[in-house]
Amino acid sequence: MAGSDIQLYGPDERDFDTILTPDALEFVAALQREFGSRRQELLAARAERRRRLAGGEETLGFLAETASVREGDWQVAPEPAALAQRWVEITGPTDRKMVINALNSGADGFMADCEDAASPTWHNMVTGQLNLRDAVDGSITYDGSDGRHYELVEEPATLLMRPRGWHLPERHLLVDSEPVSGSLFDFGMYFFHSGPRLLSRGLAPFFYLPKMESHLEARLWNDVFCFAQDTVGLERGTIKATVLIETLPAAFEMDEILYELRDHSAGLNAGRWDYIFSSIKCFSDDRTKVLPDRGDVTMTVPFMRAYAELLAATCHRRGAHAMGGMAALIPSRHDPDANERALAGVRADKHREVGQGYDGTWVAHPDLVPVARSVFEQGLGGAPNQLSVVPSVEITAEQLLDLAATPGEITEAGLRANVAVGFQYVSFWLGGRGAAAINSLMEDAATAEISRTQLWQWVHHGVTLADGRTVTAELVRQLLDEETARIREQVGDEVWAAGRPDETRELFESVALTEPLIEFLTLPAYELLD
Image 1 (spheres, rainbow, N blue to C red):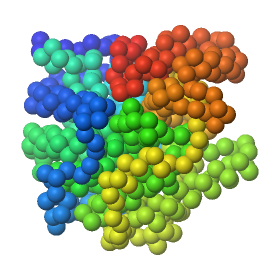
Image 2 (spheres, rainbow, N blue to C red; image 1 turned 180 degrees about the vertical axis):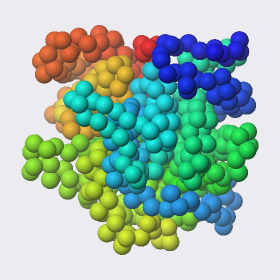
Image 3 (cartoon, helix red, strand yellow; image 1 turned 60 degrees about the horizontal axis):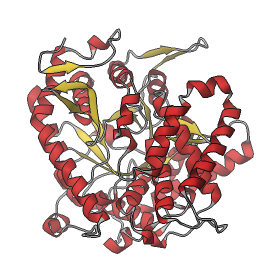
């Protein structure tokens, strides 16, 4: 199937050959050869900045060399009709049933996620492409073990696809003896197979771009888009992409990121969970910036409010959509009172986004679609967006960096939650599930990263709990013993054994207690997948 300079290493499964065609592999290989070295240079620049931040040699701020971009009078290209209204978008992995349910949910858009909500097994990555191709065709169906049949409604949500971030490799495909970029594999396969199908229906390939840390990384994506469109004879600007501002460095380069992608831009999204993780990671060695329990780090604390307000104002000044953050709640159908209290919190969060100038928002569960939709429909008076509203805010670098002003405590309950959520998520991830329902919230890699980096930081700095105890590695391991015993009792011995508990614990302890600056997805434990 592959030439001598293109090598596949993965289980040979039926139907894979309809996705991993020679032409598709050659297209991905062309992307890798054209852009692989620049990707590596940018990743090296990331690592160097992290080293300098950790050493106190520099801090983050708005770039002097790009002041003319921030001060210039320019706007992104107009949005296509399919993206004019984005009141509510649902997100989730690319398994077949999820794709159908999300597209049928009544949301304006569905972000099919090959990144944080996906465990990157070869099976998941390739069958995800197959499922998206069938969804674009309108031929996707699924028959459940309970006898239920699933197929698309007549007018499904608009499909947007999120490839993996620049930092993630696809180790199952080697080009010239090197693993390809996970970003280029995911983008290339989707664009090659689904791009022509979308265009034949009067649509276009729409993307979400994750984990960027600089406008130079956005420039690389823009060049990838131009190369891809030129290769297949499409007009430049056909592709549209929304960038997730989910790293603290990127918050200082929002204008520049929009500018680099201005012909391909569909706006920015406030990726709140990864943004918190990035804030911890950037200043993991700074005791003055240690955050309290995850539950206390809401969108209304000073540094998060500054980020959210700057994003909406920047987008609308440039004619780009501002998309709000994730409502991760999984509604309960068994406790109406508790459910209504939780939904009231979701409504309040979405009202805040409308008031800050956002054009739409994200949810993780179909039952939240009507909740979020009603808030934006009423808040925008039925208009598809509020691009004409440019919030008047002045946000400084000091405000974006003011983690120290975050109110709250570090408690045993918060410590236990990080231990329990982190351990359970790693177990799900090793089992091939990248999105997991834990304690009535949809957890993904971003929230797992918060859990384990907070544990590392609290241990590293020997912080004091609200009850006066010091957080130590021994205390974390003690709570891990207690929490895993509780989980084992809840799920039973058979399910427990199937969850690879020994490997899970080894990986979790490694990333929670010794590896603060590395995303756990890139560690050697990646080899524990297929």
